[in-house]
Length: 116
Length: 110
Image 1 (cartoon, rainbow over the protein chains, first blue to last red):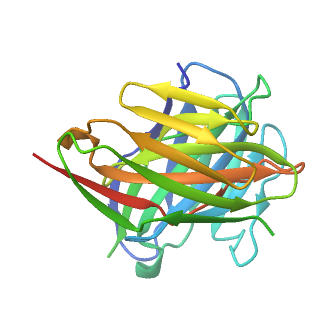
Image 2: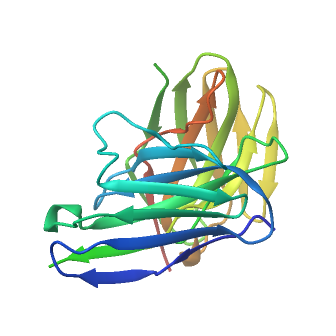
């Protein structure tokens, strides 16, 4: 149980294009989903928190116009990196918290983004 | 501000050589302490959630324990496939955010 998927697992795009990453909770309803970014050999950095049907809450320093987050249902959240640049290249990971009030976050497998 | 410190940063063991990883934390109103395993290029895999001091949980060769100031992840007779980065995180108060430690990179040699 508690499986979270991400798609795509890897994406390469040209500078200036937009990229959408999907995060799905497969076997539970996720009240809250989180988006993280991870740089090589570093721990996870929280970018934003999203609740179903509400606007996302972004962490300080994260550009909300560059990283658009939509949480349209209890099983799907999307992260769109708009006008991507090489410095946006990173490993993006989502997580989901169960609707059943457990505090545990379950993580997706991650998406490797490379912007050329 | 919540803080999590993991030690050691890296640990090399021989197969079968048991050891422990440490996670020291400070948090206002602990809601949960979490252990995850992360393999290179993958997202963190959930291992355990501990909610209160004195709690213990086990899964195969792993056992997690919790006190009011720290948690230990005990690895008994590790195998090479246990090699990974082990992450400790806490959440407290009324928000669901996780505060992560920097992780312990465990290498188990055959």
